[in-house]
Image 1 (tube, rainbow, N blue to C red):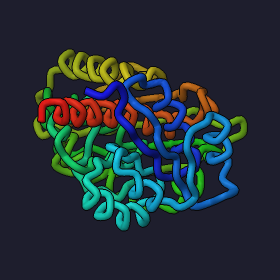
Image 2 (cartoon, rainbow, N blue to C red):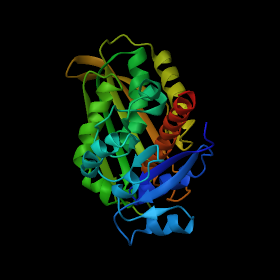
Image 3 (cartoon, rainbow, N blue to C red):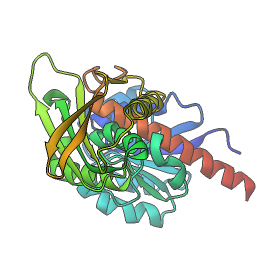
Image 4 (tube, rainbow, N blue to C red):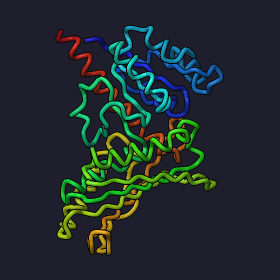
Length: 303
């Protein structure tokens, strides 16, 4: 088995650059290419200063290197739809950080083991990474009729890619609440808050179970366990307040309504700590990509 697996980052914006810092701390990975299309990119300058190979030829530079095993696509949903078939044809594994949702939707704390053999996995959205685990935890102890998430992030942490992907964000996140979280119906909302000083990422999950009979202690225990599981790879992920259960009038009659308030603080490695929305994506990507790379290396050693 080779000592390190070669990986590449495609996209040199804030997400790609923060991911670069995280991948460089993984001893099993070697960042063999940091590629984009903008010669004036701050990310390219940062990577060059770190002596990481860079290119402004975009995906072509990555396709030209046969030794690159895993590619992290941090470009945009539109661009990834073009990149995905090219990367698959080249035999490269892809971790998609855009909301393109071409491959299976993956949250490390929930369903990573089910999709480690997939050639392309999608990390949904920052809001999805923050809230889908909670919806799944709730659904496992009190099957959900409805789940809604509201993700509020600092406007200062929403770059051009995030703003261009707003429509995909809401669609992909709602779909993930259902497909991965388990809710019968899901809804997603994102808010860009212009407050100065910038706020930390905040996420609210509102869930309505199918049955009015729920075990409140089991619900709180399930949420606490899941929060600890996510915090294992996103240290700034935490509950902002105790889980709330309150019987209310709903479209399905009087039902218990579950409210979970979450906060995500960034690690502050490259981006400010208020950019938890970016940190949770890059932390999840690093965990997923490392395990995919190690799996590929084991397969190569066995063959």
